[in-house]
Length: 233
Image 1 (cartoon, rainbow, N blue to C red):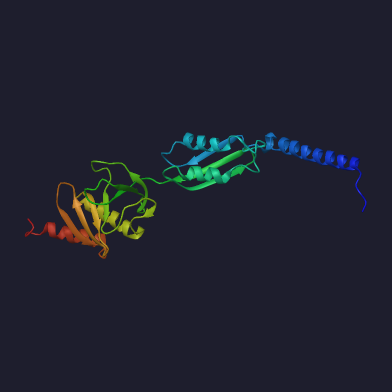
Image 2: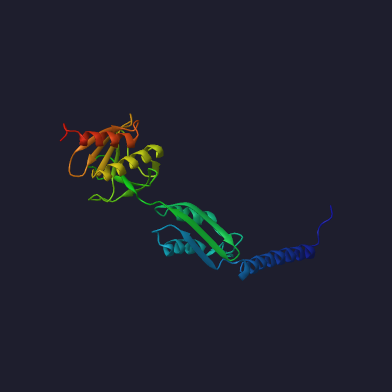
């Protein structure tokens, strides 16, 4: 068996080492080219979430290097998944998109806005904010007053990140609430059971019992007829 001369082994090692060094320096050089480096973060969307907070979160994820070699700002390997994970943790953000266009990173999102409260009971302090479609998106602080109507789903546990009330039923409840307010009857709590019966507790006292199987317009028309009757007077 023919043995390789030691000189050739040394030369092969030198050539291999040179190739590795050249590759490292090549990667280091290319990954720092200004044309391939993210230099700006543009944020859009939402109504109340501070864009600077979102931008700073993205900038933190872009800081540093991979293996002390490739900058995390390098356009081909920027940490998109890490950015999405960090921003998803920001309360009220949803429908998030992160896309790079040249040297600019575009971050766009929608924001959950509170329209009501979903509470464990009429007097319960544990509540979750609801969107206009009845989705519970975040725990609510202890609130007093009537800024938000409270919804109580009897026999159901309250928790964020879930649909509290069927969106179609929630639309009916909001319609009923609006129609009652036009009569001067303002709801502060609406309880709904599994049979879709509704118990509307009014500001200042009083309770109206109805059902979602009856259209809100019919419920209010019936109520108008009762209020206009001589017997009620």
